Image (tube, rainbow, N blue to C red; front, side, top):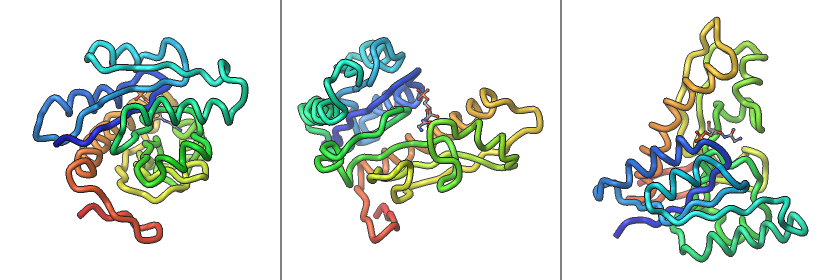
Length: 201
Ligand code: GAR
């Protein structure tokens, strides 16, 4: 039976699209059963609907408090009974309620080689620092900002003439491939956690 994925997005949703495409192969072992966004009109929501996947929009601004938003997000996601929740360009931090429900089965993809350049502006920060190699990281979400145990990483070279957009686009090509590979492996085999060490059997 396919693992049930709920994917959270904020923007264009190219990582979501890569997962939707991968899931069309039954051997992949996963199905995107719902998509959630923290804003109205995210490209990822359109992609979900085009693929026939139910999608919901839950802006933080529409909630009376951060805690209420977090509780609502938890309920909306839980309604789809996910085996794994994937944050794929979801630009909000999930709160305590969400982590209590989905901790250990909630992964996030980030456009840098963590622990370097956490936060919202990783490609810009990597360029500003002058690194020659950056990349993407898939990790198990914990209560910190991009601090959770690392599932997978992929390295990407920085070109001399990169700006943050060209660098981010190069990262995203490698990131999508990593995301598809490792979400599939987790869907098919699960993973174990020993301290910070993640192992996929
Ligand atoms: C991805 O590069 C993802 O790692 C990044 O947003 C992009 C979303 O692209 N996430 C973060 O920066 C989170 N801190 P997409 O909407 O095309 O999938």
